[in-house]
Amino acid sequence: MVPVRAVERDSLVVQCSAELSRLIGQGEWPVGARIPNEQELAKLLGVGRSTSREAVRSLIASGQLSSRQGSGTFVVSAVPVSELDRQIRQSDISEVSEVRLLLEVEACRLAAHRRTPTDLAEMKRLLKVRQSASSTAEVVEADLRFHAAIVAATHNSVLVTLYESFAGTLQTTTTAIFSGREQWSAATARRDEKAHSDLYTAIERGDPRAAALVARRLMVCTDADAATD
Image 1: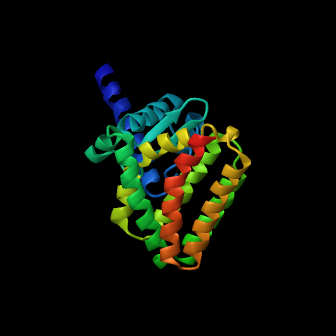
Image 2: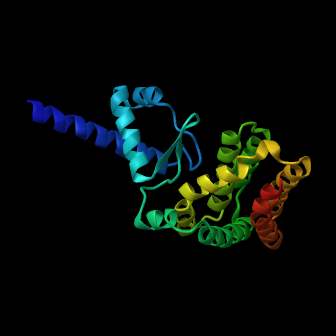
Image 3: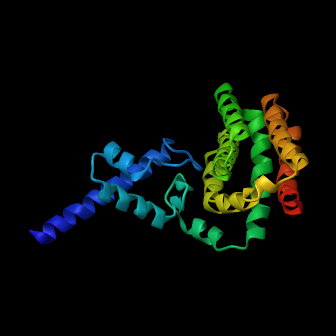
C-alpha cells in the first residue's frame, strides 16, 4: 500500500501543477502577476497545503514561476520553460537588453496599428496601477504587466510567446532598475512617468512612428537615468 500511496500523491501534485500551468497559460494570472498564497491555492484546487506547495515548487523549478522573499510568488512565463528560456537566462544581460529593445520597439509600433478598445482599456488600467504603486515590488509588477499588455495588443502570437520567454530575465532587470527608486530625483521620476504616459497616448491615437520612438527612448534612457541618481 505504501508504494501505491506514494504514486497517488505524486500524481496529485502533477495534476495540480498542470492545472496551475493551465490557469497561467489562459491568463488567470498574467506574466508579472503575483499568484495566491499556498493556503488560497489549496482551497482553489481542493487539496492540502503541502500539495499546493509542492505544485508551486514544481513550477518554480520549471521556470514558470519565481519566488521573491518577502513579496510572494510571481508568474514569469505563461508557458512551461523551453530550452530557449534557459539559454536566455544564461545569456549576458547586455545581449538580452539589445533583443528586448528590438522587441519592445516593434511591439509598440504594431500595437499602435492593431490595438482594440479592450487592449487600450487594459493598458490604461495598468498605467494607472503603475502610477499609484508605492513599493518596489508593486512598481515592478505593474511595469511588467503594462509592457506585456502592449505586446498582447500586437495580436501576434509568436511575438507574445517570444516576449514571454524573456519574462524571468525582465523581472530581474526591472527589479534592479527600480530597486533604487526611492533615491531617484524628482526629475527622473517625472521623466519615467511621462514617458510611459506618452507611450500609451501614441498607441491610443494609432501613431506607430511616435509609439516606436517613445519606446526606444524609454528603453535606452531608463537604465541611464536610474544609474545617475
